[in-house]
Length: 205
Image 1 (cartoon, rainbow, N blue to C red):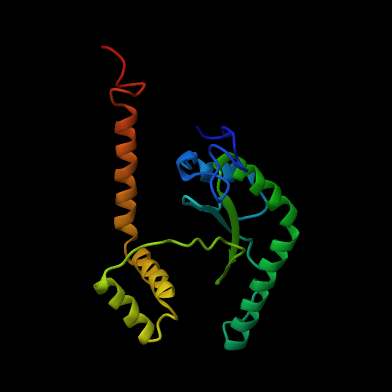
Image 2 (cartoon, one colour; image 1 turned 120 degrees about the vertical axis):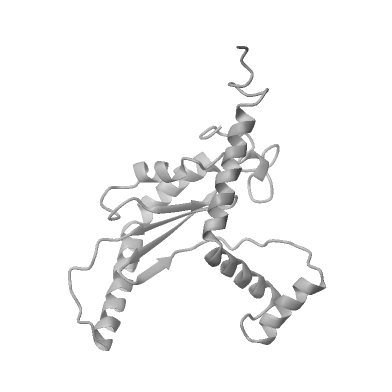
């Protein structure tokens, strides 16, 4: 249940794994974007932040107010604009550090996931410290050949880097399909909740 504290987090015992909690104990994140939209100070971003979550991490990225200075559309102007945008993101990161730590701690208590932050302005975006989570898998020779080809071609430095590259590529070109898949998964969850053991399906007519 969202927001309910699990005994054993963090630390040892039931509900605790090597990372502090077991994935089976994780609360859902259906309302995570709404929670952050309500919790964040209203003057941080120009609108609601982009919030994404998986089993390990919540990433919060917001759009900062535009720069007051307008730079000319020249090579020098674009270089100055990029530098100013990077500096503005750096200022936001430092000015909000303590508040972001407090909010992250509250979110970690609610959702049992680490929180990472980022900001963007104009054409510049930056993610602050984010989690790099190892994923173990077994690949047969055809899949290994694909990874080795990417390494041999200089696209990736290692098989692990090649696998990350492939996952990013799939994510970029399969957004619509992944969105449909997530919608279908949510529909399955609804059907389960309303089944014979659920609060709705379990009622007699």
